[in-house]
Length: 477
Image 1 (cartoon, rainbow, N blue to C red):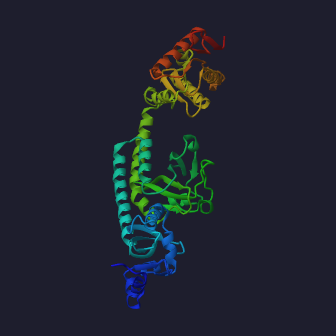
Image 2 (cartoon, one colour):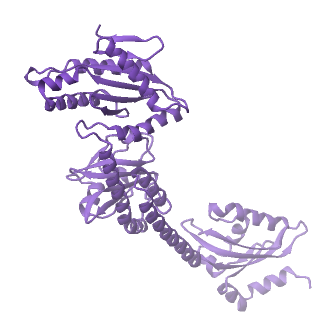
Image 3 (tube, rainbow, N blue to C red):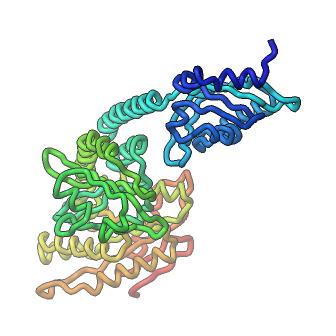
């Protein structure tokens, strides 16, 4: 049977049937007479009868669905297909919202150029179903994130690794561009780890934890998660660690361990209004586990640091050299950077102990250690190597720069005045610097610096010497 346009039009627009078609969400478009009949669901989105002609020419769908929707329309208009069934997020007429709809579209008549003349369609509102499915999916992700977070707690006690694992899991369910872990110490929030920053950005960064009215202090004092969706107007005194990034939204999670606030985990987002009550709920469910993970790792880090520290001088000990020192050396290998090694020996230290006693000898060791710390960079690594010897690792410094550091140290120590006019001994320093290769080892660098130290001692002490094929002396003659 050949379909006739007038018969189809009379059928779909018949007064006794049109209300029924509208109720069951069937719509009709006649491109010949430019007439159309909308349906209940499309009307709820603002699309009346005349609007359907424009809708069929260009689906106003969500940008994520646009390519797929345009392809379906193109296939319909070109005559490649007569029917399509697909789901899209259709925008309301005023563009204020989207709704998931499943479209079934059928071309009933075409003209001589194969263009559609009459189209009939059916829509099914999937919004509640898809929203429920999305909520279930998000909840499953949250549950999986909790499981992964529990695994992270037990998998490693390294603080940096635990922080990194925690951030990786949080990013699955809470949007943020940067994050900071801040430890509560003596009424201040001290930044101890960060995500999205360079190490230098966070070095020495400290925030007040009390006495200031801002969201961070409120999170600490009220022991609750706080969101700020307009940082510039609602967070007085907020500090962006770098000029390249401006936080627009902020979320603060107080870290509570054994009923005590131990710090704050902060999340920054470069978009306004990035956080909602849902994010607060998620963070609330995870905050206890995050606090446990970070506190266990922090305590382990503290114990490890104590094990690596010489109790008398506060510098690293031999264990520190064999652990962190090797990491510093390995980094120089990987980055193909020079590293300088100083080995420092106190001149005539036995005489100091014999003359003034071992208690004064300890004071001398502490004084020299304090001087070393004051004359080197934060990235450098100072070790009490044993007895009256110290080793200093100088990343990214060549021979000339290492020599400058050595001479500055030697001269500074020589100028120290002790109480009661007691003698302050001088030091001799051996220096070696080079770009290490993959087959080099740290102890070979130390051995060469030690050979230079031996030569400095032989030459009269209180001087620096650089290890080389043609050695040179520096300092007092």
